[in-house]
Length: 511
Image 1: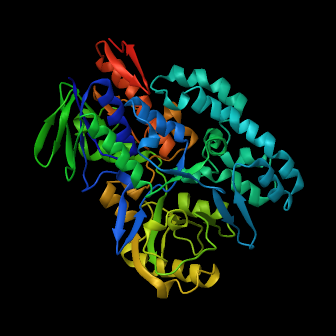
Image 2: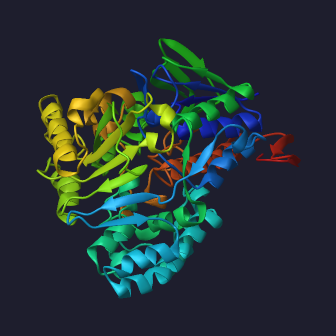
Image 3: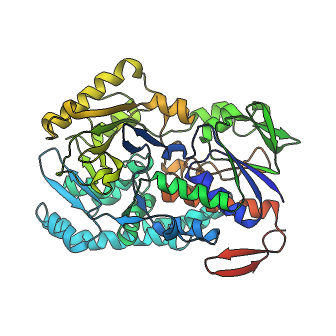
Protein backbone atom coordinates (compact mmCIF):
# COMPACT_ATOMS: atom_id res chain seq x y z
CA UNK A 1 0.00 0.00 0.00
CA UNK A 2 1.25 3.46 -0.89
CA UNK A 3 1.45 5.78 2.09
CA UNK A 4 0.18 9.36 2.05
CA UNK A 5 0.47 11.96 4.80
CA UNK A 6 -2.28 14.58 4.99
CA UNK A 7 -1.42 17.71 6.96
CA UNK A 8 -4.50 19.12 8.68
CA UNK A 9 -7.99 17.78 9.31
CA UNK A 10 -10.32 20.46 8.04
CA UNK A 11 -13.17 19.46 5.74
CA UNK A 12 -10.76 19.32 2.80
CA UNK A 13 -8.24 17.08 4.55
CA UNK A 14 -10.90 14.73 5.93
CA UNK A 15 -12.68 14.45 2.58
CA UNK A 16 -9.38 13.78 0.81
CA UNK A 17 -8.46 11.15 3.41
CA UNK A 18 -11.79 9.35 2.98
CA UNK A 19 -11.53 9.34 -0.81
CA UNK A 20 -7.96 8.06 -0.96
CA UNK A 21 -8.29 5.55 1.87
CA UNK A 22 -11.25 4.07 -0.05
CA UNK A 23 -9.02 3.85 -3.12
CA UNK A 24 -6.56 1.65 -1.30
CA UNK A 25 -3.94 4.10 -0.04
CA UNK A 26 -2.69 4.06 3.53
CA UNK A 27 -3.52 7.50 4.92
CA UNK A 28 -2.30 9.20 8.08
CA UNK A 29 -3.64 12.62 9.08
CA UNK A 30 -1.40 14.83 11.19
CA UNK A 31 -3.42 17.49 13.02
CA UNK A 32 -1.90 20.39 14.94
CA UNK A 33 -4.74 20.85 17.42
CA UNK A 34 -6.22 18.60 20.09
CA UNK A 35 -9.30 17.82 17.98
CA UNK A 36 -9.90 17.43 14.27
CA UNK A 37 -11.86 20.04 12.35
CA UNK A 38 -9.58 22.88 11.25
CA UNK A 39 -11.71 26.01 10.86
CA UNK A 40 -14.76 23.90 11.73
CA UNK A 41 -13.63 23.51 15.34
CA UNK A 42 -16.04 23.27 18.27
CA UNK A 43 -16.17 25.20 21.54
CA UNK A 44 -17.95 23.84 24.61
CA UNK A 45 -18.25 25.86 27.80
CA UNK A 46 -20.64 25.95 30.76
CA UNK A 47 -23.14 23.72 28.98
CA UNK A 48 -23.09 25.76 25.76
CA UNK A 49 -21.91 24.36 22.41
CA UNK A 50 -20.64 26.57 19.59
CA UNK A 51 -19.54 25.91 16.03
CA UNK A 52 -16.45 28.06 15.59
CA UNK A 53 -16.46 28.15 11.80
CA UNK A 54 -19.00 27.14 9.14
CA UNK A 55 -22.53 27.11 10.47
CA UNK A 56 -24.65 25.76 7.63
CA UNK A 57 -24.75 23.10 4.95
CA UNK A 58 -25.43 23.80 1.31
CA UNK A 59 -25.10 21.31 -1.53
CA UNK A 60 -25.71 18.17 0.57
CA UNK A 61 -25.19 16.14 -2.61
CA UNK A 62 -21.52 17.17 -2.62
CA UNK A 63 -21.20 16.01 0.99
CA UNK A 64 -23.03 12.80 0.10
CA UNK A 65 -20.46 12.15 -2.64
CA UNK A 66 -17.74 11.97 0.04
CA UNK A 67 -19.72 9.39 2.01
CA UNK A 68 -20.47 7.43 -1.14
CA UNK A 69 -16.77 7.31 -2.02
CA UNK A 70 -16.47 5.07 1.05
CA UNK A 71 -19.68 3.16 0.35
CA UNK A 72 -21.54 5.03 3.11
CA UNK A 73 -24.69 7.13 3.24
CA UNK A 74 -24.92 10.60 4.78
CA UNK A 75 -28.21 9.81 6.52
CA UNK A 76 -26.63 7.05 8.57
CA UNK A 77 -24.32 9.62 10.16
CA UNK A 78 -26.14 12.97 10.25
CA UNK A 79 -29.56 14.31 11.21
CA UNK A 80 -30.10 17.14 8.74
CA UNK A 81 -32.80 19.80 9.16
CA UNK A 82 -33.80 22.06 6.27
CA UNK A 83 -33.86 25.76 7.16
CA UNK A 84 -36.59 27.96 5.72
CA UNK A 85 -36.01 30.82 5.22
CA UNK A 86 -32.26 30.56 4.75
CA UNK A 87 -31.48 33.96 6.28
CA UNK A 88 -33.31 37.00 7.53
CA UNK A 89 -31.59 40.13 6.24
CA UNK A 90 -32.09 43.33 8.26
CA UNK A 91 -31.28 46.58 6.48
CA UNK A 92 -30.24 49.82 8.15
CA UNK A 93 -33.61 51.48 7.45
CA UNK A 94 -35.54 48.82 9.39
CA UNK A 95 -36.75 46.89 6.35
CA UNK A 96 -36.03 43.21 5.98
CA UNK A 97 -36.07 40.29 3.54
CA UNK A 98 -36.51 36.64 4.48
CA UNK A 99 -34.25 35.09 1.88
CA UNK A 100 -35.19 31.64 0.61
CA UNK A 101 -35.35 29.56 -2.54
CA UNK A 102 -39.10 30.01 -2.95
CA UNK A 103 -39.60 32.11 -6.07
CA UNK A 104 -43.16 33.19 -5.21
CA UNK A 105 -42.23 34.32 -1.69
CA UNK A 106 -39.11 36.12 -2.88
CA UNK A 107 -40.90 37.97 -5.65
CA UNK A 108 -43.70 39.03 -3.29
CA UNK A 109 -41.14 40.53 -0.88
CA UNK A 110 -39.16 42.19 -3.67
CA UNK A 111 -42.27 43.74 -5.20
CA UNK A 112 -42.70 45.86 -2.05
CA UNK A 113 -39.47 47.65 -2.93
CA UNK A 114 -39.30 47.43 -6.74
CA UNK A 115 -41.79 45.71 -9.04
CA UNK A 116 -39.35 45.47 -11.93
CA UNK A 117 -36.74 43.80 -9.73
CA UNK A 118 -39.33 41.18 -8.74
CA UNK A 119 -40.10 40.57 -12.41
CA UNK A 120 -36.40 39.99 -13.09
CA UNK A 121 -35.96 37.36 -10.35
CA UNK A 122 -36.64 34.38 -12.61
CA UNK A 123 -34.29 35.62 -15.32
CA UNK A 124 -31.52 36.17 -12.77
CA UNK A 125 -31.90 32.67 -11.37
CA UNK A 126 -31.99 31.17 -14.85
CA UNK A 127 -28.68 32.85 -15.69
CA UNK A 128 -27.17 31.73 -12.36
CA UNK A 129 -28.30 28.22 -13.31
CA UNK A 130 -26.02 28.35 -16.35
CA UNK A 131 -23.03 29.10 -14.11
CA UNK A 132 -24.11 26.39 -11.67
CA UNK A 133 -24.34 23.85 -14.49
CA UNK A 134 -20.78 24.64 -15.59
CA UNK A 135 -19.26 24.49 -12.11
CA UNK A 136 -21.30 21.71 -10.49
CA UNK A 137 -23.24 19.69 -13.07
CA UNK A 138 -20.44 19.59 -15.65
CA UNK A 139 -17.78 19.21 -12.98
CA UNK A 140 -15.50 22.20 -13.58
CA UNK A 141 -15.35 22.80 -9.83
CA UNK A 142 -13.85 19.34 -9.37
CA UNK A 143 -11.57 19.58 -12.43
CA UNK A 144 -7.91 20.40 -11.70
CA UNK A 145 -6.98 23.61 -13.54
CA UNK A 146 -3.30 22.73 -13.72
CA UNK A 147 -2.99 23.33 -17.47
CA UNK A 148 -3.58 26.64 -19.21
CA UNK A 149 -5.51 24.78 -21.92
CA UNK A 150 -8.22 23.89 -19.38
CA UNK A 151 -8.68 27.59 -18.69
CA UNK A 152 -8.59 28.57 -22.36
CA UNK A 153 -11.23 25.95 -23.14
CA UNK A 154 -13.47 27.38 -20.41
CA UNK A 155 -13.12 31.06 -21.30
CA UNK A 156 -15.57 31.12 -24.29
CA UNK A 157 -18.25 29.49 -22.14
CA UNK A 158 -17.45 31.83 -19.23
CA UNK A 159 -17.82 34.85 -21.51
CA UNK A 160 -21.16 33.58 -22.80
CA UNK A 161 -22.34 33.06 -19.22
CA UNK A 162 -20.95 36.46 -18.18
CA UNK A 163 -19.19 34.55 -15.42
CA UNK A 164 -16.12 36.80 -15.49
CA UNK A 165 -17.96 40.01 -14.60
CA UNK A 166 -17.61 41.24 -11.01
CA UNK A 167 -20.42 39.67 -9.00
CA UNK A 168 -21.94 42.95 -7.87
CA UNK A 169 -21.97 44.33 -11.44
CA UNK A 170 -23.60 41.13 -12.70
CA UNK A 171 -26.40 41.54 -10.16
CA UNK A 172 -27.05 45.22 -11.03
CA UNK A 173 -27.97 44.12 -14.54
CA UNK A 174 -31.12 42.59 -13.03
CA UNK A 175 -31.90 44.57 -9.87
CA UNK A 176 -31.89 48.27 -8.97
CA UNK A 177 -33.05 48.45 -5.37
CA UNK A 178 -29.95 48.34 -3.14
CA UNK A 179 -31.63 45.76 -0.89
CA UNK A 180 -31.95 43.37 -3.80
CA UNK A 181 -28.47 44.12 -5.08
CA UNK A 182 -27.05 43.14 -1.69
CA UNK A 183 -29.28 40.08 -1.26
CA UNK A 184 -28.06 38.52 -4.48
CA UNK A 185 -24.45 39.76 -4.50
CA UNK A 186 -23.24 39.12 -0.94
CA UNK A 187 -22.47 35.42 -1.40
CA UNK A 188 -18.76 35.95 -2.27
CA UNK A 189 -18.37 37.30 1.28
CA UNK A 190 -19.21 33.79 2.55
CA UNK A 191 -16.02 32.55 0.85
CA UNK A 192 -13.82 35.53 1.73
CA UNK A 193 -14.42 37.43 -1.50
CA UNK A 194 -15.10 41.06 -2.29
CA UNK A 195 -18.40 41.18 -4.24
CA UNK A 196 -17.11 44.16 -6.20
CA UNK A 197 -14.23 42.16 -7.70
CA UNK A 198 -14.96 38.46 -7.16
CA UNK A 199 -16.01 37.07 -10.56
CA UNK A 200 -19.66 36.22 -11.00
CA UNK A 201 -18.74 32.56 -11.45
CA UNK A 202 -19.29 32.49 -7.67
CA UNK A 203 -22.92 33.49 -8.23
CA UNK A 204 -23.63 29.84 -8.82
CA UNK A 205 -24.14 29.86 -5.02
CA UNK A 206 -27.65 31.42 -5.06
CA UNK A 207 -28.78 28.73 -7.50
CA UNK A 208 -26.96 26.04 -5.53
CA UNK A 209 -28.90 27.14 -2.44
CA UNK A 210 -32.14 27.23 -4.40
CA UNK A 211 -31.89 23.67 -5.73
CA UNK A 212 -30.12 22.06 -2.77
CA UNK A 213 -31.50 24.05 0.12
CA UNK A 214 -29.75 25.31 3.25
CA UNK A 215 -29.46 22.80 6.07
CA UNK A 216 -28.32 22.46 9.65
CA UNK A 217 -26.89 19.28 11.13
CA UNK A 218 -28.26 18.60 14.60
CA UNK A 219 -25.45 18.92 17.09
CA UNK A 220 -23.87 21.61 14.95
CA UNK A 221 -21.47 21.55 12.02
CA UNK A 222 -18.96 19.70 14.17
CA UNK A 223 -21.20 16.65 13.81
CA UNK A 224 -20.15 16.59 10.13
CA UNK A 225 -16.49 16.74 11.18
CA UNK A 226 -17.08 13.83 13.55
CA UNK A 227 -18.93 11.87 10.87
CA UNK A 228 -16.10 12.30 8.37
CA UNK A 229 -13.51 11.30 10.98
CA UNK A 230 -15.58 8.25 11.90
CA UNK A 231 -15.92 7.11 8.28
CA UNK A 232 -12.18 7.57 7.74
CA UNK A 233 -11.26 5.56 10.82
CA UNK A 234 -13.81 2.85 9.97
CA UNK A 235 -11.87 2.39 6.74
CA UNK A 236 -8.64 1.88 8.66
CA UNK A 237 -7.31 5.43 8.40
CA UNK A 238 -5.19 6.92 11.18
CA UNK A 239 -5.46 10.36 12.81
CA UNK A 240 -2.79 11.80 15.08
CA UNK A 241 -3.77 14.97 16.97
CA UNK A 242 -1.44 17.37 18.80
CA UNK A 243 0.93 16.62 15.92
CA UNK A 244 1.89 19.94 14.32
CA UNK A 245 3.92 19.48 11.14
CA UNK A 246 7.06 21.64 11.13
CA UNK A 247 8.59 20.49 7.86
CA UNK A 248 7.69 18.79 4.61
CA UNK A 249 10.76 16.70 3.79
CA UNK A 250 11.93 16.89 0.17
CA UNK A 251 14.33 14.30 -1.27
CA UNK A 252 15.43 14.36 -4.90
CA UNK A 253 12.77 17.02 -5.64
CA UNK A 254 10.00 14.78 -4.28
CA UNK A 255 7.94 15.00 -1.12
CA UNK A 256 9.24 12.17 1.05
CA UNK A 257 7.13 12.78 4.15
CA UNK A 258 6.68 15.21 7.01
CA UNK A 259 8.12 15.93 10.45
CA UNK A 260 5.81 16.42 13.44
CA UNK A 261 6.90 16.52 17.08
CA UNK A 262 10.40 15.65 15.94
CA UNK A 263 9.24 12.40 14.30
CA UNK A 264 9.68 11.74 10.58
CA UNK A 265 6.64 10.22 8.85
CA UNK A 266 7.84 8.78 5.56
CA UNK A 267 5.33 8.69 2.71
CA UNK A 268 4.97 8.30 -1.04
CA UNK A 269 3.13 11.62 -1.20
CA UNK A 270 2.13 14.54 1.02
CA UNK A 271 -1.12 16.50 0.82
CA UNK A 272 -1.39 19.76 2.73
CA UNK A 273 -4.75 20.87 4.06
CA UNK A 274 -2.93 23.50 6.10
CA UNK A 275 -3.10 27.16 5.08
CA UNK A 276 -1.61 27.39 1.57
CA UNK A 277 0.75 30.31 2.27
CA UNK A 278 1.83 28.84 5.62
CA UNK A 279 2.59 25.53 3.90
CA UNK A 280 5.02 27.22 1.53
CA UNK A 281 6.55 29.85 3.77
CA UNK A 282 6.98 27.70 6.88
CA UNK A 283 7.03 24.02 5.86
CA UNK A 284 8.95 23.90 2.57
CA UNK A 285 12.56 25.09 2.55
CA UNK A 286 13.17 27.99 0.12
CA UNK A 287 15.69 25.98 -1.92
CA UNK A 288 12.85 23.66 -2.95
CA UNK A 289 10.62 26.50 -4.17
CA UNK A 290 11.84 27.85 -7.48
CA UNK A 291 8.43 29.09 -8.64
CA UNK A 292 6.70 29.85 -5.34
CA UNK A 293 9.27 32.10 -3.74
CA UNK A 294 8.52 33.99 -0.52
CA UNK A 295 8.22 37.21 -2.55
CA UNK A 296 5.67 35.77 -4.98
CA UNK A 297 3.57 34.26 -2.19
CA UNK A 298 3.49 37.53 -0.26
CA UNK A 299 2.42 39.46 -3.38
CA UNK A 300 -0.73 37.34 -3.63
CA UNK A 301 -4.02 38.82 -2.46
CA UNK A 302 -5.46 37.34 0.72
CA UNK A 303 -9.01 37.48 1.96
CA UNK A 304 -10.41 39.41 4.87
CA UNK A 305 -10.46 38.05 8.38
CA UNK A 306 -13.22 37.90 10.96
CA UNK A 307 -13.95 39.06 14.49
CA UNK A 308 -16.16 36.59 16.34
CA UNK A 309 -18.10 36.57 19.58
CA UNK A 310 -19.33 33.29 21.05
CA UNK A 311 -22.13 34.06 23.49
CA UNK A 312 -23.91 31.79 25.91
CA UNK A 313 -27.01 33.68 27.07
CA UNK A 314 -29.24 32.64 29.95
CA UNK A 315 -32.41 33.77 28.21
CA UNK A 316 -33.87 33.43 24.71
CA UNK A 317 -34.60 35.74 21.79
CA UNK A 318 -37.44 34.15 19.81
CA UNK A 319 -37.37 37.05 17.30
CA UNK A 320 -34.14 35.62 15.88
CA UNK A 321 -34.08 33.14 13.03
CA UNK A 322 -31.32 30.56 12.77
CA UNK A 323 -29.31 32.85 10.46
CA UNK A 324 -29.53 36.63 10.51
CA UNK A 325 -27.62 39.28 8.57
CA UNK A 326 -27.61 42.78 10.08
CA UNK A 327 -26.34 45.46 7.72
CA UNK A 328 -24.73 48.84 8.01
CA UNK A 329 -25.95 51.67 5.78
CA UNK A 330 -22.66 51.56 3.88
CA UNK A 331 -21.96 48.63 1.57
CA UNK A 332 -19.29 49.41 -1.03
CA UNK A 333 -17.42 51.82 1.25
CA UNK A 334 -17.37 49.35 4.14
CA UNK A 335 -16.11 46.59 1.83
CA UNK A 336 -13.34 48.93 0.66
CA UNK A 337 -12.36 49.71 4.26
CA UNK A 338 -12.05 45.99 4.99
CA UNK A 339 -10.34 44.72 1.84
CA UNK A 340 -8.30 47.68 0.57
CA UNK A 341 -7.79 50.32 3.26
CA UNK A 342 -7.57 47.57 5.91
CA UNK A 343 -8.95 49.79 8.64
CA UNK A 344 -11.47 49.06 11.37
CA UNK A 345 -14.39 51.30 10.46
CA UNK A 346 -16.74 52.93 12.94
CA UNK A 347 -19.67 50.96 11.47
CA UNK A 348 -19.98 47.24 10.84
CA UNK A 349 -22.22 44.59 9.35
CA UNK A 350 -22.62 41.21 10.97
CA UNK A 351 -23.76 37.64 10.64
CA UNK A 352 -25.62 36.29 13.69
CA UNK A 353 -26.00 32.55 14.13
CA UNK A 354 -28.55 31.27 16.64
CA UNK A 355 -28.02 27.50 16.59
CA UNK A 356 -30.48 26.98 19.46
CA UNK A 357 -33.29 28.15 17.22
CA UNK A 358 -33.03 24.75 15.52
CA UNK A 359 -31.22 22.63 18.13
CA UNK A 360 -32.07 23.63 21.74
CA UNK A 361 -29.61 21.02 23.01
CA UNK A 362 -26.73 23.33 22.10
CA UNK A 363 -27.45 25.37 25.26
CA UNK A 364 -28.91 24.73 28.72
CA UNK A 365 -32.70 24.74 28.86
CA UNK A 366 -34.19 28.17 28.24
CA UNK A 367 -30.84 29.59 27.08
CA UNK A 368 -29.37 30.67 23.78
CA UNK A 369 -26.14 29.72 21.99
CA UNK A 370 -25.20 32.59 19.69
CA UNK A 371 -22.24 33.57 17.62
CA UNK A 372 -21.61 36.82 15.80
CA UNK A 373 -19.20 37.20 12.90
CA UNK A 374 -17.99 40.64 11.82
CA UNK A 375 -15.87 40.90 8.63
CA UNK A 376 -12.66 42.79 9.48
CA UNK A 377 -9.30 43.41 7.75
CA UNK A 378 -6.62 40.76 7.83
CA UNK A 379 -3.36 41.40 9.66
CA UNK A 380 -1.88 43.38 6.79
CA UNK A 381 -3.76 46.23 8.46
CA UNK A 382 -2.23 47.92 11.48
CA UNK A 383 -4.84 47.00 14.07
CA UNK A 384 -3.60 46.11 17.53
CA UNK A 385 -6.13 43.45 18.47
CA UNK A 386 -4.75 43.09 21.98
CA UNK A 387 -5.87 46.65 22.64
CA UNK A 388 -8.88 46.70 20.32
CA UNK A 389 -10.64 43.39 20.89
CA UNK A 390 -12.40 44.12 24.20
CA UNK A 391 -13.66 47.63 23.30
CA UNK A 392 -14.81 46.39 19.89
CA UNK A 393 -16.66 43.50 21.51
CA UNK A 394 -18.35 45.93 23.91
CA UNK A 395 -19.38 48.10 20.96
CA UNK A 396 -21.00 45.11 19.24
CA UNK A 397 -22.81 43.99 22.41
CA UNK A 398 -24.09 47.52 22.99
CA UNK A 399 -25.43 47.66 19.43
CA UNK A 400 -27.16 44.29 19.71
CA UNK A 401 -28.74 45.18 23.02
CA UNK A 402 -29.69 48.83 22.54
CA UNK A 403 -30.17 49.21 18.78
CA UNK A 404 -31.12 45.73 17.58
CA UNK A 405 -33.32 44.84 20.53
CA UNK A 406 -31.65 41.89 22.24
CA UNK A 407 -32.72 43.18 25.65
CA UNK A 408 -30.54 42.50 28.71
CA UNK A 409 -27.96 40.75 26.54
CA UNK A 410 -24.91 41.89 28.48
CA UNK A 411 -26.45 41.17 31.88
CA UNK A 412 -27.48 37.68 30.71
CA UNK A 413 -24.13 36.47 29.41
CA UNK A 414 -22.91 33.16 30.87
CA UNK A 415 -20.20 32.82 28.21
CA UNK A 416 -18.37 35.42 26.14
CA UNK A 417 -15.42 34.23 24.09
CA UNK A 418 -13.66 36.54 21.63
CA UNK A 419 -11.83 35.35 18.50
CA UNK A 420 -9.75 37.80 16.44
CA UNK A 421 -7.50 37.62 13.35
CA UNK A 422 -4.63 36.93 15.76
CA UNK A 423 -6.42 33.73 16.82
CA UNK A 424 -6.70 32.62 13.19
CA UNK A 425 -2.98 33.16 12.80
CA UNK A 426 -2.06 31.35 16.01
CA UNK A 427 -4.59 28.50 16.09
CA UNK A 428 -4.87 27.71 12.38
CA UNK A 429 -1.51 29.03 11.11
CA UNK A 430 -3.50 31.31 8.80
CA UNK A 431 -1.21 33.69 6.94
CA UNK A 432 -2.11 37.31 7.86
CA UNK A 433 -4.88 35.86 10.01
CA UNK A 434 -6.98 35.49 6.87
CA UNK A 435 -10.03 33.37 7.62
CA UNK A 436 -10.42 32.21 4.01
CA UNK A 437 -6.87 32.25 2.62
CA UNK A 438 -6.27 33.28 -0.98
CA UNK A 439 -8.83 35.91 -2.05
CA UNK A 440 -11.23 34.73 -4.79
CA UNK A 441 -10.77 37.42 -7.41
CA UNK A 442 -10.52 37.02 -11.18
CA UNK A 443 -6.71 36.99 -11.22
CA UNK A 444 -6.78 34.28 -8.52
CA UNK A 445 -9.52 32.00 -9.89
CA UNK A 446 -9.34 28.63 -11.67
CA UNK A 447 -5.96 28.31 -13.46
CA UNK A 448 -4.75 31.52 -11.79
CA UNK A 449 -5.50 30.17 -8.33
CA UNK A 450 -2.85 28.05 -6.57
CA UNK A 451 -2.93 24.64 -8.21
CA UNK A 452 -3.95 21.41 -6.49
CA UNK A 453 -0.54 19.93 -7.37
CA UNK A 454 2.77 21.58 -6.45
CA UNK A 455 4.71 23.10 -9.33
CA UNK A 456 7.95 22.86 -7.33
CA UNK A 457 7.89 19.53 -5.50
CA UNK A 458 6.77 16.24 -7.03
CA UNK A 459 4.16 14.21 -5.14
CA UNK A 460 3.11 17.25 -3.11
CA UNK A 461 -0.53 18.31 -3.34
CA UNK A 462 -2.87 20.87 -1.81
CA UNK A 463 -6.47 20.70 -0.68
CA UNK A 464 -8.68 23.26 1.02
CA UNK A 465 -9.71 26.89 0.67
CA UNK A 466 -6.44 28.13 -0.83
CA UNK A 467 -6.56 26.00 -3.97
CA UNK A 468 -9.06 25.43 -6.80
CA UNK A 469 -12.02 25.96 -6.68
CA UNK A 470 -11.87 27.80 -3.32
CA UNK A 471 -13.43 28.33 0.09
CA UNK A 472 -16.79 27.44 1.59
CA UNK A 473 -17.75 23.89 2.52
CA UNK A 474 -18.90 22.85 -1.00
CA UNK A 475 -15.83 24.48 -2.57
CA UNK A 476 -13.42 22.84 -0.14
CA UNK A 477 -15.01 19.42 -0.72
CA UNK A 478 -14.61 19.95 -4.47
CA UNK A 479 -10.90 20.70 -3.96
CA UNK A 480 -10.63 17.21 -2.47
CA UNK A 481 -12.21 15.69 -5.54
CA UNK A 482 -9.94 17.66 -7.87
CA UNK A 483 -6.83 16.72 -5.89
CA UNK A 484 -7.86 13.06 -5.78
CA UNK A 485 -7.82 12.99 -9.59
CA UNK A 486 -4.26 14.27 -9.67
CA UNK A 487 -3.04 11.83 -7.03
CA UNK A 488 -4.53 8.89 -8.93
CA UNK A 489 -3.09 10.09 -12.22
CA UNK A 490 0.40 10.57 -10.73
CA UNK A 491 0.77 7.62 -8.36
CA UNK A 492 -1.20 5.09 -10.34
CA UNK A 493 -3.26 2.26 -8.91
CA UNK A 494 -3.60 -1.43 -9.75
CA UNK A 495 -6.97 -2.99 -10.46
CA UNK A 496 -9.15 -2.73 -7.39
CA UNK A 497 -12.74 -2.61 -6.23
CA UNK A 498 -14.37 0.69 -5.37
CA UNK A 499 -17.56 0.88 -3.28
CA UNK A 500 -20.13 3.18 -4.88
CA UNK A 501 -23.22 3.28 -2.72
CA UNK A 502 -24.75 -0.19 -2.80
CA UNK A 503 -22.77 -1.14 -5.91
CA UNK A 504 -19.28 -2.54 -6.35
CA UNK A 505 -17.56 -1.27 -9.45
CA UNK A 506 -14.26 -2.57 -10.77
CA UNK A 507 -11.99 0.13 -12.12
CA UNK A 508 -8.50 0.71 -13.44
CA UNK A 509 -7.11 4.08 -12.39
CA UNK A 510 -3.83 5.55 -13.59
CA UNK A 511 -0.71 3.85 -14.80
